[in-house]
Every structure is written in structure tokens, then in C-alpha cells.
Image (cartoon, rainbow, N blue to C red):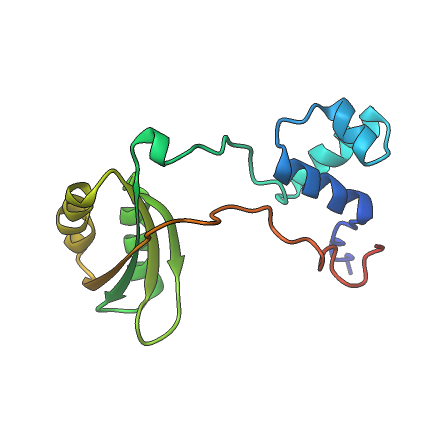
Length: 170
């Protein structure tokens, strides 16, 4: 009987690489290697492995919303008529196509089935997205909005204290 594939083993160095890359995704490999006490080639090999394993999902610039004219952040709770995987996919696909939707979560509870985060220029732009796009998605029956007055924290880095999982060398 074939042996099931083993899960990759991660350690303290992998955690340090992830922590550094979350803070500075454009850090040169030589500087990253020095920070985690590895040779540049070993550091690059580990970073590529973390990318291949899907732990590093990508790199992107952290852009200032207000300076881009996206001064209004709105959280929208959606209730839907039907609950099935097909309906969920339909809604997710429709929401993914809307540039104003910057985050979408399937949630549990009485008050909502989906929780969205929108970044829009102003209230008029929000009204247009809500009425023309979001409420036009057939299974959506209700939307409740909460407006952010001020954002004090909106991005990682993600906490890594719990990682690697138990059983892996730390």
C-alpha cells in the first residue's frame, strides 16, 4: 500500500522568513538571509518552498485608500434566500467581479450569511454599488451597512506564534 504524502516540515527559520516578508515583502534576499541567519541560497530555497506550498500567497503593494480617493470604507452584511454550495458560488463569483468589494467572508449566524468590506470614494458611489450591483444578485435578499469612521488597523502582519503546528520542530 502506498504511503500517503507527508506534510512539509516547517521550523523557526520558516516562521522568521514569513514574519520578515509580511513586514517587508520587497526585502532583498541577501538582507532576508542575513536577518534569519542563513546563506542567501538556502534562504531563497526556503522562500521558494514556502511559495510553492502556498504559505506565501503573493506579494503586493500596501496602497493608501484615502490618497487614491477611496475615503469611505463600508462593511455590508448580506442575507440570502437559499443556502447551497451552488448559490454560495454564484454570489461569490458576482461579488468577486465588483472592484469595490475588497474582502468577502462567508459567515455564520442569524444576522448575516456574507460579510463584505467595500472601499469606495463616497456615499454616492456606495449607493450605486449597493443598488445596482449587490442587491441585483438574485439570492441576496437583505443588506445592512456599517460605515467606518476611522481605520486604526487594516492589515497584518498575521500572528505566527502558533506556527509551525505542534509536532513540527520549533
